[in-house]
Image: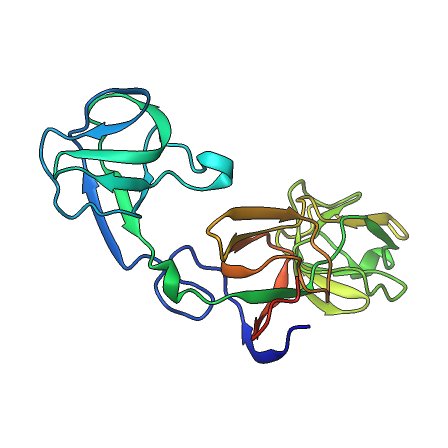
Length: 250
C-alpha cells in the first residue's frame, strides 16, 4: 500500500513535469533527412552530432506513438549522419524541423493523481424570475429556486438568451453573470437550461512515457496510473492534486 508523502496542486503543462522540473533536458533538430518508407534507418545529409540514443522524435509524418504505445526514439547512433530508430516510419525527404528531445527519465518521479472537481455532463434547469428581474441588455440572470448544480462554464439556453451564452460567474444559488447580455427580456417562469457542452477529459504522461487521455475521470479517486506529467484538462476538470508515493499502490 502506498504512503502519501507529498501533495502537490497541479497546473497542466506541456513543458514541465508535476514536480516542476523541465521535461525536456536537451533538444535538437534536423531538416535534411532522406526519404524513409516504413524504415528504421534515418539518414541525414548534414550531420548532427547532438542527436543521441534515447532521444524522442517528433515532426510531420512521425507518429506520436510507435511500438506498443511508446514514442519513436533513436535506438542507435551509427554516425552523425546515420541513426537507427526503434520503430519504422514513413516520411518525405527534408522534413522541416524534425525535433529530437532527450527526457532523462531516470530522474522522473511517479505520482498518483486525484481530481477534486469534475462536474458531470447532465443538464439542469431553473425557472426564470419575473420579467422585471431579467431585462434585455443586462448580464445578470436570476431564477426562482436555489440550484447548486449551476456552474461557471455551463451553456445557457431559453427564451431571451442569445446563442452561445455561457455562465461567466455564479453569484449565488439563484443568480449568475452571463458571458453575453440577455438578448430580449425573459418572460416570467421561462425554463432556463444549463449544461456542459464538452466532455470532461484529462491527459497525462505516465512514468513509462506513455500519453493517456481519460474521459469523464472520477472525482476524489486516485487515477489508476503512475503519472509523471499532466498535459491538459478540459475546462470543467479542476482542483487536480498529485500525491507522491514511496511505494506503488497499483
